[in-house]
Length: 477
Picture 1: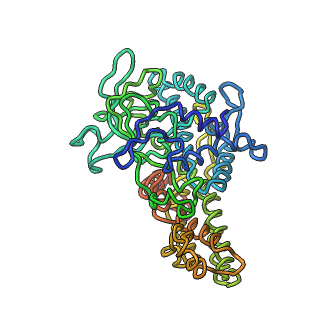
Picture 2: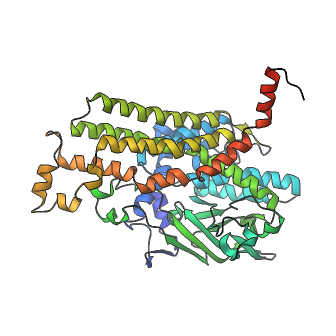
Picture 3: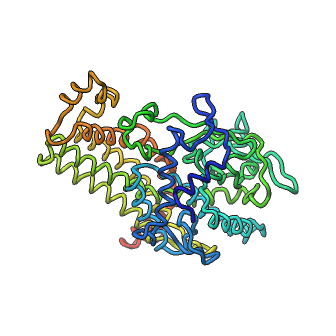
């Protein structure tokens, strides 16, 4: 297993091509826009060496019997799924940010079981190939970006019907050595500071879309790969410590638009190539695993938001007001409700044919549907408690200005015993953790709300519910 510092050192050996605002980033390590995301990902490595959380941060590989970082592990029991949830909440409490590694973790688990099913039905050898790859991931403690989301172009058209065929990643040729893939992946969390990307199809496919049924591993710095680092809310503040709020770990995950311009992938890194009938299975399993997470990592973040709101109430002199107390209790209620759902979908997990354990997909989608609503309500309440000052607070530069600073210090004072700088820090933390980027990620990460509603309708077994009603009042067809 790698320590957080060893992970950071490993990034220095990579040479990905990354641009931001038209300028090439020569090194992600030390770059003010990316370093906070690196620090957050490093926490997933360090937790494996924390004696207090060893049971959550590590696991024993079912392939080798070796102790490994849990982020490279294939779940074997419902207890493993529960430990994952508890681990994600705990790391969220440490970072107050997206720590990026969940997507690759979920991709590994989805691909593991899906390739097994493919081999059983089709006689392919994808699963054994993937197992060998997975052993290397465990040994190297690889950070992987789960690369599912395609640009999609015209959402009303299937991949093969797009005006531009590259709107979905597809293979353009194959030979005895491997395949050539082309297209792009959008909103790629943690891509800039990962080692590899695990490409997956983004939707269920039909026979005419078989070229888009591609699953493979590509190094982030492979020839033909180009990354464009995305804008984030208040990213211009990354050069001022206090103004950025969570200055050590950032806000979300440092997303990129990743272009694949005729990238070669050797066969030992290809785990689906044209088997369109299994694309939907892979997408559904990945989505369910990933939606499980949101009642865990996001609750770690809301734990910090709630704490920050209680602090700012202290700093503002409003902590004893009954309506403030009641609002904080409401935030706690919403937060723990979301956490309960993550535990429930994990505890109800079941074994698949591969031997790996899978979450209850219905309850996993309930988790994420709740997140798309309750996080917004928690953030609304936080703005209510903090006050309008989070939208109008002077900058850190003004706070520390040799002439203006005395006025900012004087008139931005709350409770006299609390340093003004401390009040600034908490206000900025609340602003940045509850602002645009964090809310958008809560809404659309792991799929937009409608995606969960589709899955809820599919998983709810309405025919069984109809039979329950008919049986109760003695109706027979």
